[in-house]
Length: 198
Image 1 (spheres, rainbow, N blue to C red):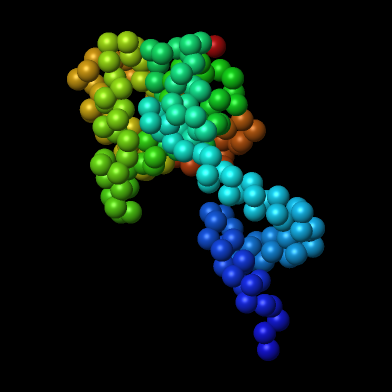
Image 2 (spheres, one colour; image 1 turned 45 degrees about the vertical axis):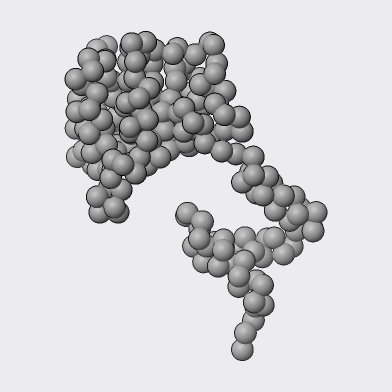
């Protein structure tokens, strides 16, 4: 006996394709949407369609934007000599939330992962090298502290080092509120390497 409709099954199937959403979470979302008013559901659908129609990738830094080039790339108040290299556009959002960084960005569109078939030509590495000119003073490598992110950072270091541009790597270590006894060896090693004078 089938308890749900074909339309409901299709909605569950589509929602479960989203990252971090399994079938049970998708099912909860569908039941929530069924209880919502038609206006609320239509508002969600319209917002998703508008997002897909209006948002594109900046042709300079490959961040998401509604205008090309993006507001960060065209800003006259940003430090144009510093480029922070990140894997994905959501990394830009996370760094911008700190309010500390005032330079430019370059979004690679992922990280090197031979096992998943992602090589240098699949990322915006050539575009980064094209951007590096006499006015670039520093490259900040802000890839994720995992195997793929480390491999990507090492690859970029080899490419950029001959250009004699200062390269830095974001500090890594223990997150605030964590306990040393629960940290893995790599995290502890990074924390010790990145120690600061007191």
